[in-house]
Image 1 (cartoon, helix red, strand yellow):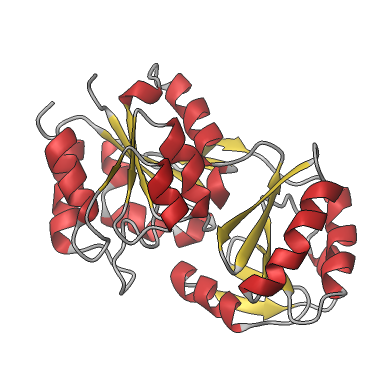
Image 2: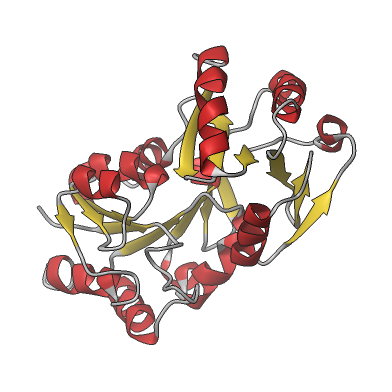
Length: 271
């Protein structure tokens, strides 16, 4: 089976420990696109946290795509068109905010196109997201009122042990209404129902006349498992979480050793 498309997580996968794409990997992905293959950046980040990397890889020139918010928003890079946009039911925002406020040490965040909104108490985990996305964290007093626009996702952020205590109750309370899962031990994602990277890729591939058999996916963290299991070839980075490695068909080198480049050279450049 010829692999025509590669979908890449960003943090810990495409970018190295300094949060940059190495020059060998950048060149390799551009050469891959010149050969007619498609590159998709699949991230939990908001669109403005993905677009600068898409531009660096010349996705607008070669017809690539970005999946932001874990696939809730799919953007065609050639013209910036949003070809799918899934949002949270507005009525869930206030009760989730009220519940998370009862657990000291946790925050609830969401995104505008230019900012991260902190709804309870800002923390160091939010700063990680701000650095990765290159946008600022802005505290707001009335979080539900501030979210007066279509919301693709929220995140409960905090110490991993503390998040474990709220994950189960939230998943049970919103079963059948929302998708709630970890992207990192310190981020609990609150997503529209049935939104994950695999579902977004399945939708996108159908518009391209392709199937999962034409797809390679590379990732390192919990929210990459769905697409790694979905892909014709699912790849975990050497630095991936153990559960991600277990889900993968193979393990490549780490994000600091151009693991993505090794995959495309072996499985895509020769076909």
